[in-house]
Amino acid sequence: MADSTPPILVKHQDTKAFVVSLLEASGVPKKNAEVVAHGLVAADLRGVDSHGINRIPSYLARIRNNILDPKAEPTLTQVTPVVAQVDGHNGFGFPAAHLGMETAISMARTFGIGMVSVKHSNHFGMSAWIVQQAIDAGFMSLVFTNSSPALPVWGGKSQLMGVSPIACGAPGGENSIPFILDMAPSVAARGKIHKALRRGEKIPQGWALDENGRQTTDPAEALKGVMLPMGGPKGSALAIMMDVFSGVLSGSAFAGGVTGPYDMSKPGDVGHFFVAIKPDLFLSLEEFKERMDILYQKVVSSEKMEGVERILFPGELEQLTEKKRLKEGIPFVHAEVDALNKEAERLGVGKIWQSPS
Ligand SMILES: NC(=O)c1ccc[n+]([C@@H]2O[C@H](COP(=O)([O-])OP(=O)(O)OC[C@H]3O[C@@H](n4cnc5c(N)ncnc54)[C@H](O)[C@@H]3O)[C@@H](O)[C@H]2O)c1
Image 1 (tube, rainbow, N blue to C red):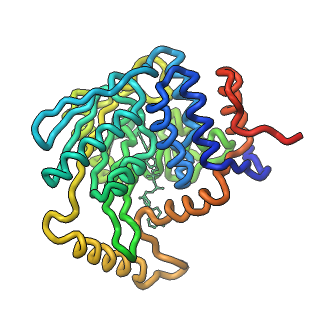
Image 2 (cartoon, protein in one colour; image 1 turned 30 degrees about the vertical axis):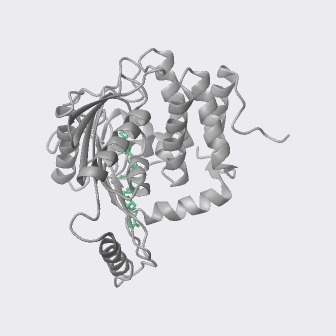
């Protein structure tokens, strides 16, 4: 049954401090704990609740099961002046990804472009926080990852490819917002099914099939079956693309070999692929920004189809949610708060929220 009581609003600073305290109590060095918390809270702020701090219990379970090393430090190998590789050493995916994008940006600052492959990593949550890292430094980016099997290839019926998000971005101009595309190649991200399960909600028709290949609106049945690719063979091809660039190229697991974040049997061995690009390679920065302003204005002022109130730029919906949540706090349902507080009790740290009574 869906929870009909009003959600609990928690300030983003408190949410982040809570996650850092759980992680530090689990042996994660403070610097890395801050990066994990930043990526998770960024998702909650942007309304990508499927990839926010509710992922923490499963991450902590991986540490307890000795399949994720909380103390691992990612290491860097420079391959050519514009290419580097990060080895995540089976630590959290967030610090490995952060180092990867930081390195790609630094190479792009000097040479115009920087490419980084990441191996032996783990789930890094919502891709957009890494795209935002590049935007904050003034760079365009590609952010790819592979993930555990959840999606059949076109024509197949069993899970083989990951619901691996394809993400990219570019800084905006003076009168536009940055472009941020961050999308799973499935009709919906699998995290949205986990979220529906946590919240006792149904999922829409057309998202997934149950284990017998039938359409289902029950999240528990959907998790036993397969996610449906968006756009048929095109979604399936994008999922394969993520595996080529992130898995095959890096030396990490691929072709169905990545272990899912909820599978406690073995390390994830996820691969990522990042490219940072200087936006003023072919035009001045001023011209680039003016052109982004024109593109933005043309998109959002496009003639609307019937029933549409407002046209949004990719990333804009999430930016609007972020503005609201920065002010009002992040909404969590009681079941989510209970699960997070249970982790706090187990680790002996302060709770995320306590009932005033
Ligand atoms: N790390 C992993 O393994 C993993 C796996 C799957 C998904 N994810 C994450 O899950 C998240 C959700 O993915 P999703 O595919 O469900 O995203 P989504 O369908 O909510 O959004 C996809 C894209 O469409 C844009 N968009 C949405 N509504 C819009 C509108 N009305 N107008 C204009 N643009 C609009 C969004 O800005 C976004 O760029 C992503 O952040 C992704 O990184 C992570």
